Image 1 (cartoon, rainbow, N blue to C red):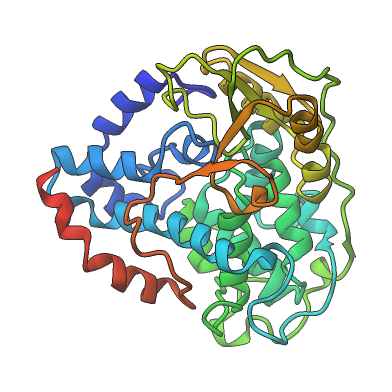
Image 2: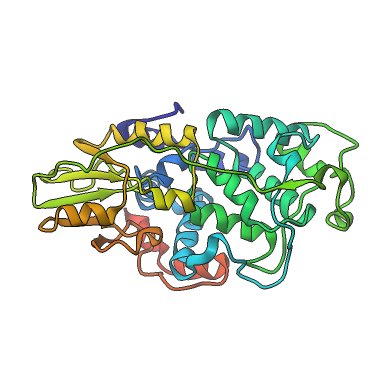
Length: 363
């Protein structure tokens, strides 16, 4: 897929997905992945829309694995709703205490060819295969004994599909903070799924020896300086009584598309000080905002915007990172909207969702 796709292109792409091929090859870096993740993270399309279009063409058995992966995204969003500090605090006490990211990882100099190549690609494109993300998290957390926060922030900063809940939740899962069991992979596993063949690395050892010591390559760590450089903007001119507030997590071109309203993409400096993202990602967001008719850019605090327009009605889509906004929130499109409680594991969440999934057989 190209860097930016129109909604029509995305819908055509969804309709062309072969879910069986996805299930069989998704774990391989050259496998048949969908490429939809950046557009789901940015709210151009929803997990529910993808699931509905899949089930309009395929039986549930054929696309159950892909729908399960979509439900992982919903699960992490629900988890962040109930655990707002997901990005910083381990969900289980104890674990790694070294703070920072191994310099070898940040510089793409781990000596693991598949990993180093993927890091270089990440810097250039903002994309990284999900299986490689798991390898990276395993190297940083169970292998290098680093707390998840710093390396997870580094990865989030560079990802086109950077999503605080999914990203930090996944790192917590790998670190063992969700299930109590961490994820590790040795060189043989990496070779299999990345189509490489490498020997003599610090991961070229049996599984039972992984994480017992600290590889010399991973000894030095740093806390990277991550900054977002937002353009300067003025307070937008608003002439209508209703204002829709968009974020970099909601760039849905169909949201109230037929209504005569003002539309403002709000990028708060305070938010990006907490969750910085890089230039490649910011450019992607600006490309996507062009697809929302009449959308104005405002790089400033939402409180200032509300104070400047006290008589306007402001509405946004619900998101835990923006729950402090004093505006009207609309629900997002969940695959199973009525499964919304706290679940300590994905398996528990998925079990509840499965009770409702047959309703999609007739979509």
